[in-house]
Length: 123
Image (cartoon, rainbow, N blue to C red; front, side, top):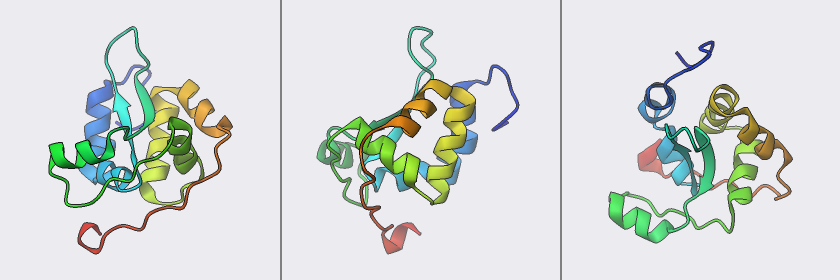
């Protein structure tokens, strides 16, 4: 389901290829996430920074601190330059669901931020 479908269901693909593999937690540990949408007026998938990192951690009861990136381009740089499985999965999902966002990831001017290592209890 993660590839080869001309009109994939965004949420079904996200569950199978992102959430079920805990990529969402790995991305949040770096301060970013993928935002899915099935609204026809919006792009189906975007890379975004966790704008309210502390609030997100508290609201979701996360067992780790969510770093605060300065911009969405900082988040895109992590996706662009990252070598871990969640970075690769994000690029593959963007290629499938929103190629223009993948182009923005590739072209973002932000330098890559240091990747925050996973907490021992999250590996």
